[in-house]
Image 1 (cartoon, one colour):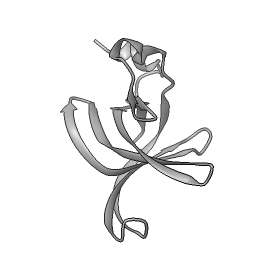
Image 2 (cartoon, rainbow, N blue to C red):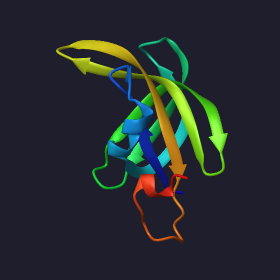
Image 3 (cartoon, helix red, strand yellow):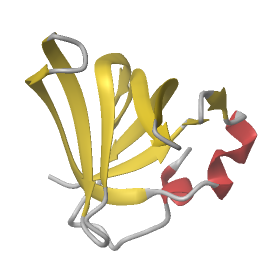
Length: 113
């Protein structure tokens, strides 16, 4: 299955809903797995989104599905970024949309009602 990802936060700051249509969306594979994370010294759930085009990989730690409707759902958690040798955790939410492979590809926003 293919999914489309829209990140709802940038460095922990929420993107206003009326600006979502200007955000870049990625198409790829979405999965949630359990893993042993040495930074947390425990078993940790990780949501992973891997894009098809640039092979980019997005990670969301401690994901929780907070909303589900038809072919879309929202996952919240936190992401970690390393800048100048310092790792910082930020709140993050993803709006994930199931891509209907039988339909011609359309922009994310044209599917919204």
